[in-house]
Length: 375
Image (cartoon, rainbow, N blue to C red; front, side, top):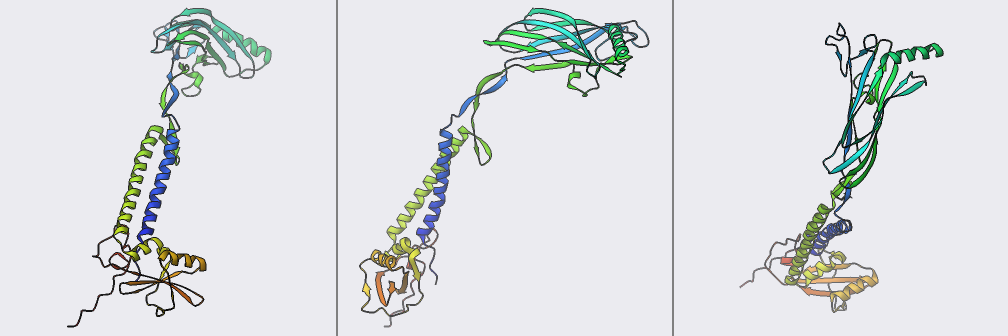
């Protein structure tokens, strides 16, 4: 019969697995406890500058403008609309206490797409105080068409469309939530002017065609959870600490449990079982003794002495069994070194460490049944 698993080896495997888990937990703990669970990170913006473009004109009521009024989004036909009132409503949005002031202005730039451009003011620079202001200017469409005609006459180029860029010029100073502020906001609004009309670009054609604009100020600082990269995943430091502690304690408890159970089984075992538990990896089982044990064999005082002989001569230890007697041999150059041990009969009980602890009731083989005595 083949011997059962060696509990010492099973315990080593289980202990090795638990040791790896414990080592991983120790490494995770070292990393997590070496880093602060929180740190300063970017929070919401301290404030947001935002504004809305608009234009309008009073025009003669007729087939083009029935109510005599042109409003934002409608095309401005130059034969009907001589000028436009252009405005930019500016506001600083914040929930924090603030004291703000600054300046506003408004300009327009006309360009033909071939390198020529001309910039002219629509509203002079004006100071303001507070968190909102509206700046307005007058865009003279008739003057723009007249300027375009003069440029075309000189250059010989007649572009299909001119771009008219309305640009507010806002400077901002003051304090927000005790923080000094010095900022600027100058979003462009692009309009297209051809021979007949001034229009906004088609929706989505260009960001500069959007009527509403916003620009965040500097981010506030707030406490945020620091993270660790574990196997490619992000894990918060606090969570990593808890995971390392729980798994580490579980691995330690498991290792202690395996060790205690192994020691308990060793204490209950007889000498062959203890030999097998400690030195099973050095022993080769032989089903039938190859020789009669001679009187001139060198008898060793302890199994440890036999192990030293095995190491010295580089020989495996042979194990044979005769009833309750266990014989261990090391043979070299015709000399047999022998150690014998007696197994102690015990009731069979299951071994949760993976198999019997030794021969007999605690070993890999059961002793052969004794013949009933003849009366």
